[in-house]
Amino acid sequence: MAEKKQDQTKAGSSLKDEILQRLREEADSASPGPARPAPEAVSSRGGGGGFALFGVGVREMAAYCRQLATLIDVGVPLLKSLQILAERSANKRLREVSKDLARRVEEGQSLSSAMAAHPRVFSPTFVSVVRTGEAGGILEESLRRLSDLLERNAEIRRRVIGAMIYPMIALVLEIVIIALIMIYALPKLVSAYPKPEDLPGITRWLMQVSSWFAANWLLVLIIVAAIIVGFWLFRRTPTGRALTQSIALRLPLIGGLVRKINVERFARTLGNLTAAGIPLLDALTITAETADNEVVRRTLLKVRDTVEKGGKMDEPMRSAPIFDELVIDMVMVGDEAGALDTMLLKIADTYDSEVDVALKSMSSILEPLLIVLLGLAVGFLAVAVFLPYVSLVRNPALIPE
Image (cartoon, rainbow, N blue to C red; front, top):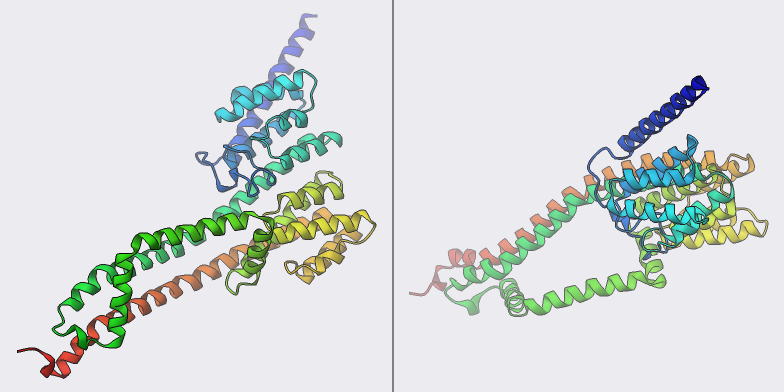
């Protein structure tokens, strides 16, 4: 008996050591740096879509999903797994939520039902993925796939923001420099001209614009703020979101990048969900709900309805402006071969590389373009300012005695 008890103790200690070691590995791989909230931490549709937690960084959430999947995978009961995470999670919000999830699961609720009781924390889409995983007996795989999706989406967003930081800063600096020249420098230089009525037409026009902006700067700020807020509110409506995103897909410089990013997200999300064992119809619904682009969302809902009626996936996809013929053909080949998940993930990897190339190309075009625009603007102002003095040099008679 003593030997059996000793073996059980060793086994329990070994399992505990294995769990702790795997948790450390998962946390290290998912959180290479200090955790911080990312843009995806709030769903783009106000909680209706996306996998993200409110008030929790994407990397923290990804680590949480991966650690919960690891605990379940090594045989730890769900209740005990939640209790461990309630103690180990670095995020205070996640610790509190985990304690409540453990309490509800102990009372007999399913994990998805317990999560649904926290609508300000878990999005409906997140809950639906967990519910589907529970129903199919693949909860740990569903959680692991969710973690992968969160990390990949966060990485793409980080790369896009990183590529746009320099152009945005340069654009803001250009506007500030031009405004300072027009409001402060231009009036002082022109006021030194002996006969303002003899100023060239371009200089007089620029002075009128400068004077108007100087006298109505508050009105200008209010108008700009109203336009920004109005555009933001309009874009939050289904019609506004669909219109602005359709226009973005057709813009010459960023349209290709937007299309590649959305195709990559579609392929990776649907591929991971189907690879996790989630039925195709449910996977299409979840992918549509998590799509940031309204065009993609509506297309995927049409695809789901078509598949539900016994049709093929390619019929609605060919009518959408976002999917290439090659992508559609690859999806159909994978579907017919019974390897849809594998084909989708290959598409996602391919487009992930294309997103990198598109970002570098866009940066290489935008940077010199902004420099040229700044040069043209400053050159125009310089001509308007110094043209009167050139006239004085050529015609000294204009100089008063």
